[in-house]
Length: 525
Image (cartoon, rainbow, N blue to C red; front, side, top):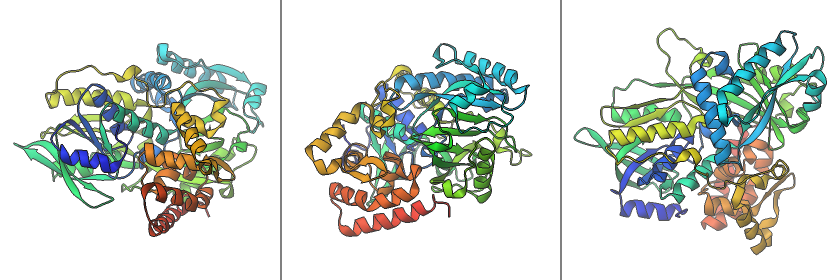
């Protein structure tokens, strides 16, 4: 198993023609495709222009769910598919996916039976893969579950189950899973050109974003799984290509866990503009979100708009005894969704655009997968590889991923989840071993959090982290939990990384400056 970028690049250069499948994009979908293809025995390579899950895939609401909103919209097929995938993901990555109770608080008499019936339908659609059954709650039961819920005019509630997870940690584990099945997976490797032979795509030019050098790779199936950047690759294929996706921004605010006071989540089904809002416990904090705002451009680091921040704070404040303010926000992050470009006359109603994925092959044989959501990544990957088999005339082999354990898979109890180390699953012992071999690595990176130096070393050695942002944002999630604390950790983390990566003091300084500028965008003034 190769984890060193240098080793992987050397192997790619030495054997550029060896591949059945070349995957462009290292988010949820691309990594899922790499796992599916490699586990079927196809020679697979994946390249990602930045870090794994840098964009949309690390900025979700952290839910593995069918989508109650889609049920209300009547998209039964999408909900059923997502609920079945929710069950599979809970079985395949039990260290990262857990059952989460959600409560729809009822403040009107009609709400209780209305949502009660709706959630029974939700349960039924999950079939044998259901993870729990919904129940009606009395007012007292709702208050017991969520002590900080607003009690005035509260009648009762409906409790239902969905899944909750850590998105970028799952992405890293998928990268490791693909690697274990023989795939070569590389971050900071940008595709700058598609190669064609007899008008059919057969390769790519890749630029190493860290060294600047380029090299070519050739394969039978070329898969475009670049999410919000999908049109950039399609334009390399056909210059006159019309945009197939449009950006919609979702914003989330992180506040202290005391705002809920318990371990159950709140689902607000009807907000002032018809959107669903969640208040979800996550790593001892609470995620408030999300929004659905049409934008005009795709960027790697989107920023929350003032009106989105105000909307979330105001809506959450209507349901919580202590109304959150800007000062209470530990981190504010935004993510862009690649929605299917609307037809003429659809306007800006992004919340009404289906979250179903789109899969198609171009005349050149380029396969493109876009849309969808984290919950259905595995199903999307299976369909994509099935299409690749037909388009590229690969030997037919059955999908393996329905019951394939993901790297780190380990049954995890609720009490174990109170310690951050649970996210490593079966890798925990190896990190503890690092601490035992070098006691300095057992020291905390910050007094407020349990993160240690050993986790930084592990991120570099086993999880392909290359920058301060990689570690603090997507390996230990500090940036997404408390941006100010992440800035305070930065010098210590940079020093440990510099030692591991054999970098000098100038690299450390540049990394700290770059990360601080990035983190400032997550802090509300």
